[in-house]
Length: 333
Ligand SMILES: Cc1cc2nc3c(=O)[nH]c(=O)nc-3n(C[C@H](O)[C@H](O)[C@H](O)COP(=O)(O)OP(=O)(O)OC[C@H]3O[C@@H](n4cnc5c(N)ncnc54)[C@H](O)[C@@H]3O)c2cc1C
Figure 1 (cartoon, helix red, strand yellow):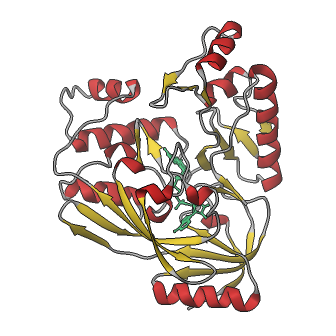
Figure 2: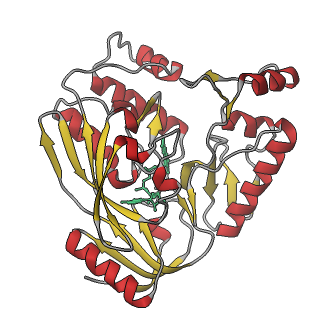
């Protein structure tokens, strides 16, 4: 197995930051993973597990071992599917559609690998991963022990799980198991998705129609990370209590909101950023996208410091205008 030294990570983080890892390796199976853990243990290196790098922001070079978990393989077992952590997420969505197994359509075109999908319980257009999630296999980065996590062990929440919290940096997820269905139940809670289907004159969508519509909306709305560096939404949408929303509405009557299952009110962070006058705001090479205010883009030469300074400016201005503290969605290193 190859351990690269002083490895450039600019092609391994979709924000395209020009940073380096002291060591980098790609683990395709359990044997590779054991070797990587031994390598890090012998040199007392911190390990950072990486998938496609579409939800990480580096504050500088990483002085440890960046370990890419690249286990391949997709096994269908009736309506269950067991997926290697290194499988491309969007490929999985389309592959399961071809197999006439449904449940992933609304999560089409989310960048990254399957192994990272439970980390923030990926979600889009009214669906989150936990709706279909069964279990995952992982390896403890310190002991090498192979572990299984059930759905409740993962403590999923809105763009959250135990892996972003107390188990951050503790395990490498190697395989996920999802429960799909041969029957398609549309999730059409988002007006934008309904409008796109109407525009396509589709009254009763098949799963593939929903997937196609989601892809079209995403392509229109979000900057393509292959063209301009970004990590998608930079902030979570704040979830406010009824009382906080009422007091906010007294100052800003037009604030949009959507009620969550927990009875909270989700306010679009993009709206707050835009209303704070920050769309198009830049620090060095980092810019608040003019296409979508929730996305910070690398105009080509952004440094980690530019991105973090822009983020700090956004957080301060949103807090002083709305008294709301924005929470960063990607994982910061
Ligand atoms: C244009 C764009 C649009 C996006 N849209 C959405 C969206 O709609 N919904 C959404 O939820 N997200 C979205 N994202 C964020 C991102 O695509 C997802 O969070 C995705 O799951 C990250 O996958 P990744 O493989 O790139 O993970 P990485 O960025 O490599 O890693 C993310 C985190 O997971 C950890 N991790 C990764 N792999 C493993 C593993 N095998 N074991 C243990 N830990 C691991 C990393 O250590 C890191 O903390 C978007 C990103 C972009 C660039």
